[in-house]
Length: 342
Image 1 (cartoon, rainbow, N blue to C red):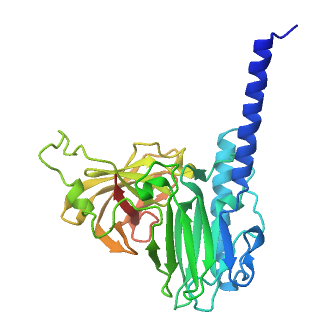
Image 2: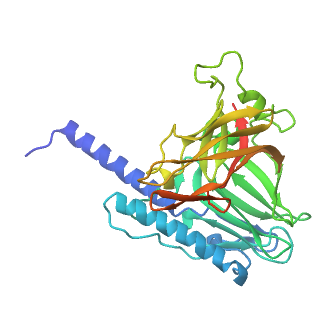
Image 3: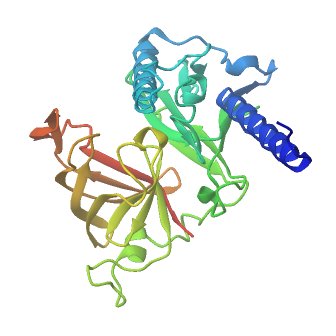
């Protein structure tokens, strides 16, 4: 059978395109998210930090590995590609004393844990899943999860280490693909302090209207009490959320939740009263009905950004059945960070 020149060129083009995207995916998956730059040694190779993992922090590393391994195995099995878990590259944790307290702080990412059966299991337009653990005076660690496109851990001449975080463009009030950097430092209590936004910010904290004022129902409310309003976004454990009037919905769930919730799923609904919010939250589990529970909280200014923190006794399950509600439930505290509008 003879292939016509047009069909041959089309086939060659599609083949080249397929190879290009496959190579790009492989390159992105092996990309190093954390780059360490010291004053005396310059850029360190392979994402390595100048310190080993402290023994007290080893359980934190292992817990994050278990989370990634489980998510990878579940998604791999769901796609019919077996049940293999993640592969952990070495070094997995980048360790640097960023708050100058004499103890190493941990920076980890799913980019160092490729999943062959589901390459994008913990990545998306906002980058890769990332977790850091910053040492506190009492010997414990402040642990945070986020999504990053990249980060430089950079030693400065006078102020110790700072981080240059590469974020989704929305954080700078731009389109998603636009460059958006936030320069931050960590203090000795483990708190992150925002220093600068070189590419601009969605709104300066002093100029930003409280989200409650922007989201409270005006005269143009819809029949069910929600208002038509500009997009107000926030980060919730790596998922991009939309604060739509009296509801908080998943605008872009993180990849590990793609089989659990879909874009547009309501996580919280209720009512604003000034800076305070109270209402009903929903806990999701694959294959189960959502479990509702009461939450309340308020917006707070911290680290140069506006956050919403909600608390309430969350559900505890046996299988799909809710057997009790507890303040120790993983759903008992909901944090929506970096609230901003466009």
